[in-house]
Image 1 (cartoon, rainbow, N blue to C red):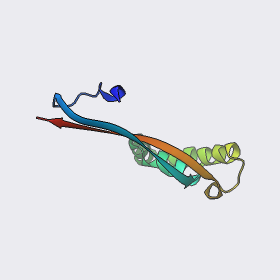
Image 2: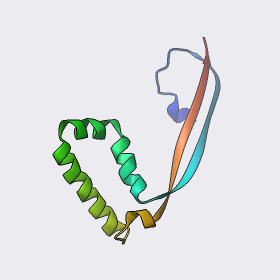
Image 3: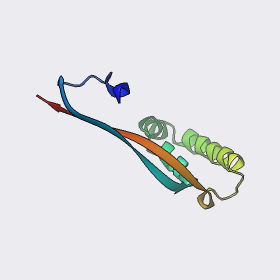
Image 4: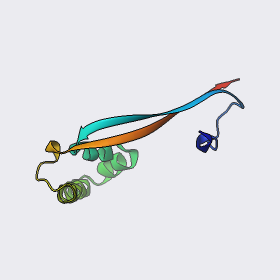
Length: 90
């Protein structure tokens, strides 16, 4: 848990901290959705819509090769995300 202690927060008195993992099974298209939901991807898409389409098509093609499939929605991937909770007192 100490790995998140370097985050600067406005309060000093930590009263609770915990981490937990969440594992999800999602289709291969989830990776595309995840990339498109990131802030930099959204800004890139807004600034360069044509380049964004071209880039995402390349990502789809490379994922299809890596996952050995024509249809990314038919491949199930397992992704684990770590979350942390830190509660402070004023």
